[in-house]
Figure 1 (cartoon, rainbow, N blue to C red):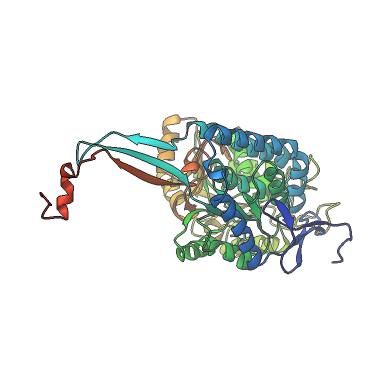
Figure 2: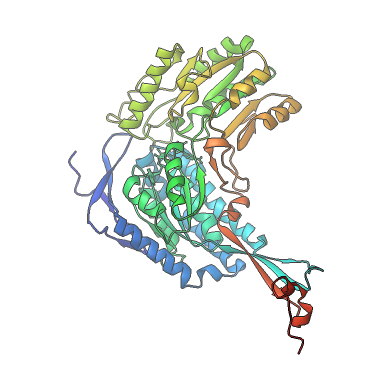
Length: 510
Ligand code: NAD
């Protein structure tokens, strides 16, 4: 495709300024709603990664950034939140034209969530136990002991394409809150909003504290996670790449947190309020065209309510409107790419081949005004068994699988029968049943009578192969610090340091 001469161009962002990549090469970023080139972005190299890590290392080792007082740091975080709001329109636009996310969701949810995360952590920083004093022990002798929580150093953040800005903030905000420096590599489909975000935030930060290197996972991503001067990796993406990252991190024993895939179970109990459970379950799976890691993709329904639930699901799903994500009336935008569209359609074919019954959608969606875009109809399969590929593998598209159950125990057993454990949900009017299910479901978050209810003051992350560690909430701050124990002896006379006798059998009495 010919590149329009006035197409936006983004270099790398290193050490507080825009930088050309060493090879001066660019790659195209496409708008998934029409297939056109949305921007051209620098194709980073290993040398660029080294440059960014060196800048981040320098900013960490040789500036006052890591020693900033909590009050001052809290003020910085508040000002970063203000910058996000002040630039909301441009950020939301850049995110929408590259990720295909609707401007309605990005503008009214993601941007506010991002700003709120910085504010929430700004408040946590003021109460964070950076230094704790331990009681003086009677043995082996009087001493003064501290536990200090110190920043880890240079953090490499690697992000996916589905909610690139929000997920970038899940890493940038706690890293900065604890005094670390960051090099971020966004997904190649969606680097625009992260680059702009880095420029905006860096106006409030010392040079080198926040850097972005764009480029492929295999070159830039791998160079970053194996760089000897990187201390921590925070990765969000597929479980498959997560395994690779963990292996690469082992080379230099880096602190590693992983937010990975999901195939989240959603259970409607027989006493559920169906007028809420049905739209709620569709909200749980079709928001952002099914491209959310914690989407409720496996819906478990009681045998005797199956037909009525399916009928209502199909009725409501058929009303969802596709369209240009920049149009605030659009319910569902495109999926990220032609490749992703083909992968989703292949799963739909596989579902049919495995014997599941297609009751809604299942095809490419043609959207007037968005010719060349990658749209897929909201798709619902019934007669699914939990062992089918469409019930076990992450499709990452608008595909709901409905599975019957005859007892709640059976539903919970099937719900947990997956390698994943990111989210789960249950719909019921009975709080006791709800908490029993929540206790038994193996997932990092359980929603009762709702979905997608993430909070900036609550931890988010996966059980099982959905990840290691948690983001958001005060717990996320721990993942960006390391503990140091400092012991000060209060025993000045050697004759009272009886424990030296563990080594010296004789003492000089003379
Ligand atoms: P992906 O794993 O293909 O890529 C994620 C990032 O890793 C990208 O920036 C990519 O360039 C980079 N990468 C790829 N190979 C690499 C390598 N060898 N070394 C270093 N970096 C490498 O994921 P995706 O397709 O961008 O995103 C979709 C996946 O992300 C889904 O599986 C989804 O469930 C998951 N996800 C998880 C969460 C969560 O919080 N748990 C949130 C959003 C998305």
